[in-house]
Amino acid sequence: MRLDKRHPRYESLMQREALVNGYEEGVTALAGLIAHGRGEAYDYILGEKTLPQARHAVKAASALLLLASRPVISVNGNTAVLCPEELVELANACDAKLEVNLFYRSRERVSKIEAILKRHGAREVLGMEPDREMPGIASKRRWVAEDGIHSSDAVLVPLEDGDRAAALAEAGKKVIAIDLNPFSRTAMVAHITIVDNVIRAVPLLIKEVVALKKKDSMELRKMVAAFDNHENLRDIIAHIREVLGRNFSPKLKRML
Ligand code: PTJ
View 1 (tube, rainbow, N blue to C red):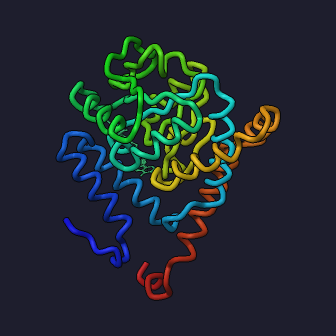
View 2: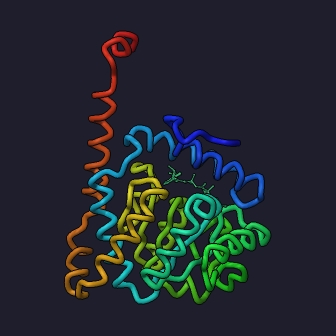
View 3: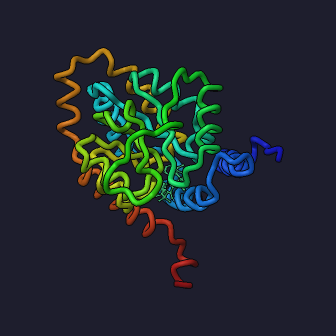
């Protein structure tokens, strides 16, 4: 489909188009389209822009990624089509490994996602031959690479299910989530939750990681320690409540 850049919902339509194509090519899971719809609803309420609270979380997350000795970026079928180039750039910027980890795992999907990431410059992509099983995860996401998620100390998990986010935290890893839904279990159990669209959050992470590289580790540690995830989520939920109250027109209010 050809989309006109002047269309008021151009960006949003482009994301849908990428996901629909991703599904047709066997990269994105069918349920990934539903997950995206849920994300869109939150993004609409958030004004489709990055909130100051998300910027705050991006700073702490970037510091954490730089402090980690074995950081891993987990890639699924949605992020592989929404921001593959940026995920590779982020991995390079913070010296992280890329691992394909899927809820609806099949060798075919893993291999297609690996190919996309390699097309965008990734040298190594883990996940094709996962040799470790993580306890506490009911889905196929329990299969992880020994060299990747299994031995990582920090994992970036964009678009996650709460099950795995909790299991990763339980396994002693620092979990950074990107999730538009501040009420999700993932958002609650992660150490740092960036409530923003991956499309905007990943480029911000790249910028911040590059900027923070100049800081010493003491300063980075202070930034991580000063970040309170639950307080940040509370602020975002308060913002959502305020937006929902503010946006009712008098006519709509009368109808309710
Ligand atoms: O590719 P697979 O097989 O690993 O499957 C991936 C899906 C997305 C199907 C799987 O992880 C899943 O079921 O996820 P959930 O539990 O539906 O959670 C997805 C979360 O991501 C929801 O809370 C959405 O609000 C959020 N979300 C959706 N799109 C975006 C998003 N958050 C940030 N940016 C988005 N673009």
